[in-house]
Image (cartoon, rainbow over all chains, first blue to last red):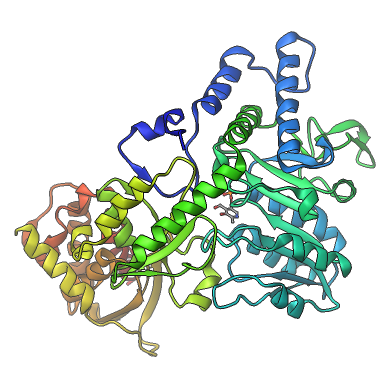
Length: 398
Length: 139
Ligand SMILES: Cc1ncc(COP(=O)(O)O)c(C=O)c1O
């Protein structure tokens, strides 16, 4: 893909394979943020003067871009948050806390991210709802059969990553939604790893809630999105109250909130972040989400084929799609491998990747993770493979 | 000491660490230490009697530096008084943090004298010592 010149970070002599953690930013994103701070740096929704109106326009235009990008019905369904973690917490604390009862069951899996698992655990402690697990198959995938098996007449929510951050498999969310809705179960999706990599269409998927982060899709840090079906968001309680979300208040009993989406966005929003996210979406659409998916998956297949030929490498998710590879060098602790590669200017992530429960399934507590994106190349993978052929990785990591 | 020798000592301790495996024994004080990166994870158990470190054992999963540093630390501190241990610990921390230190009491831990060149490894080399410090400072 001819995109590398668009990314200033790629001028550094490093190979970046940690796109699951965060991504580099193209010029148009950086420029849009700088433009806001340099040329119309005012608050939003305070429009008594020109530059403030300009801010409103840019901020709401970004919301419109997000709406189109994920095919929501209206911009009222798009709430700006600080990121996936914020979005998932808001959904669970602002909606489900008031709509679930003791004994109600939530289905997740053991490969979910901490930012999905922990708010559910917390809510379980608070109101007595129960977190249960859908079994993963031998390739660590979620199958419709296993979802069906896990559903009971107490199941009220299925909460899953669309794509997990450790294994990178794409879950059959559309089929799961259909199954869930036939039984009156709501579906909440962590889109942190999917929205950046594949076309996510909330209407087509039929999901009820979605959260994702700007920084993992070429946008700035500190901005994210909460999508919810309008009728559900209407019933969501604001977690934060304050400026920008109320219409009038005279006393505790008499507070009128603004309509959606502003009701759920108390305080001065991350204006630069939203504008930057809008620019990131423009960029992704220009390249084309289908092209990006194809490229990422092609890189994964290429890397798996090459790495499988090395007898010192163990790959844990060779048979899943997506753009993530979890591996270890035999006899070398994941962190030592990452440090060895860092000595050769290759960035990979070592660790449990915030999915700590998965070790039950794959019997390793930590792995090295490669996560590819549109600017990665086969040449970069060749270089990685060359370095991993070394028989002295442990020693050279010291 | 040349680099190759240092690396070999580290790898030796990594593959055959001293006193790995915990015991069920109430005479030990236990502590878990880990790094922010959330990978290195070590549990230490220490038995101090009459101001003397009688035994240290450990378990856990950690990188080559953390694991070997734990093994070397145990070797150095066994049967030392708490005061002596604190002095060694102090010199060790100085060495890792690239300050002047007394080489004569660093012993085998000298293999880490250039860890400061890899900032991402410093916390690994300090990990077991952080744990032991908490325990013996209470003594
Ligand atoms: C699957 C998944 N969910 C949630 C998150 C949390 O995203 P953020 O840190 O941007 O809130 C991440 C990012 O690490 C992720 O990969």
